Length: 125
Image (cartoon, rainbow, N blue to C red; front, side, top):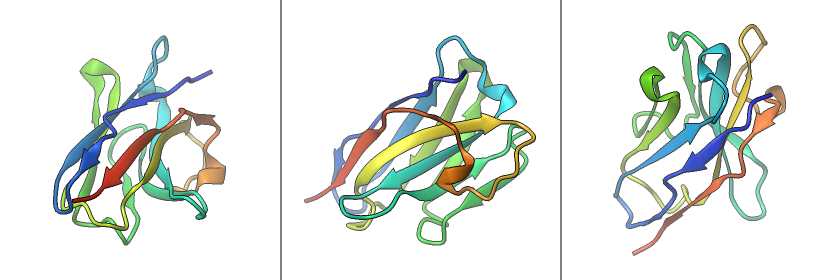
């Protein structure tokens, strides 16, 4: 069982930057494909970015390519989501999720089975 815990959500101005962090106390993230997802009010949850267990394969939604980077800090057992140039369309609850290595994935929410509670990102001037 994996119990992801997110942190780092905040209120930022348009064009600002934010880094979200995901860890899992008691479990190693090294054995999991990890992803970040977001859900805005009235909208379906969507994949933002995912990374293979090895870290060699990443996937980004078209809406965030070039602005967002997913990385693993294995020493800290953490998956980070670095977000730059935040836009009015980015505010949402951002959630971290994992699925055991070896699973088929395209970075769709239904492919992941261990979810955190989420952290709120707000973009406003």
